[in-house]
Image (cartoon, rainbow, N blue to C red; front, side, top):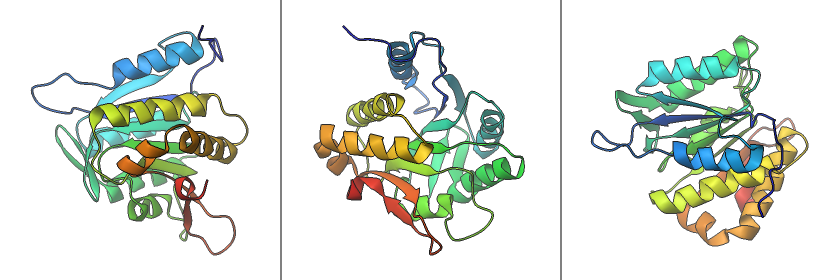
Length: 217
């Protein structure tokens, strides 16, 4: 039987979703309801919001960063090489990064971001968002996402596997994400390869740069 790992504890996760199509009600919300119910014994252990454009996403990120129970952000939306999309327009990587930089200036914290989108989770975008060589940089410590076009079912499986492993990890934010990377590579190497799934973190030391934990674990 499935055992609840952390009953009564918040997941520290906010799920933010763009509408997938004008004539569909498809949503990742039901997937996360099940996931957090299994892990935290209630489907209400995470925060859920929808965004339509860059202004709405900026507002949501600011509020999530100000919520003491939120430390991790999942953004589900259509994606391209340098932007993600809501029903009201695109959000460029610069707009996303600016929203994160404002968190730092306000003393707020989001420690990690998972981008459930096609194409946007590539190394160039991750380096831009993590900004390892400039100051100020966003307060986040890792970015996960897909660099390829992704199938809904296949990526949903990997999304859920990621968060299930992450919820069972322990330690600092970096230790937790490194544990998660190792466990996913062991459990689903084929999906990781086929979907181009990556987890990036800043390199240690003065020279900057980022590492893809999925390529090294």
